Length: 315
Image 1 (tube, rainbow, N blue to C red):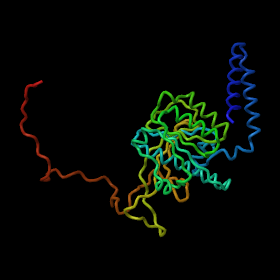
Image 2: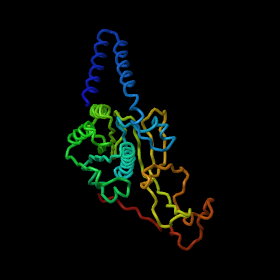
Image 3: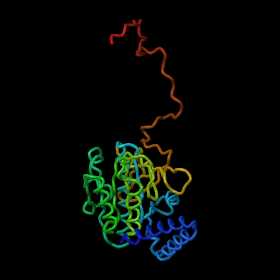
Image 4: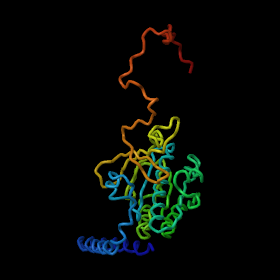
């Protein structure tokens, strides 16, 4: 299924090379644009189903209506200790996509997670009970842990090209040399040809050039207090997970930041105000003014040090 897309890309590159040798750049670009336009007109009927709306109007507008379901979406975390936030956000996207497929085709298709061994040793592996509580179906969740990155890339290409999985998650630690722009481009062509998305989860990685349509930086955020049906707050509880999301790569001129709370029961995101206080009302200070300075004559003040002696260095 990916052969026509790969052949077309090679044909475009060959035409451009010939045009440069002849000093005629316009015909090659015109031919490429003509073929791309023809393909766009041919697939107009299917374009509406090739996006995953996140349900947040401002965020959906920033990502052109939703995440592409025929391309790569990259999610990265700055530190390995924040791997849980990146993992949680990607799994939330997979749960939303799984629900979208169930509603459109009345079929439940499995999600494939291709894990990184080092990240698994540091952050742990998916747990069936936790997956169910998070909104996923454990019996529809496949997990693979290749020993080498080359094997993981091969498995990701085969999984995307097969079209069996509604979403494939590829976990990569850092910025390894075997996974660069060329490998990213090849995965993007596979996703485009098979009309299946690939979620690239980069744990403890930095920004780098890739073929991803969008890139998110995810960090953990304080959970909100859990509300009860009568409107009161449940004391001593932990609410739904909250993600601090920064849209780093998009058509927007500057990065955009959002606070999103994941509702595992409804499998959807809810926007959280940037000024929301996650603490319960009885945990907050009665007066929000500037606190008074400490007393200067308290008996527990640390006493000043006595006389100090200077010693010659012994080494």
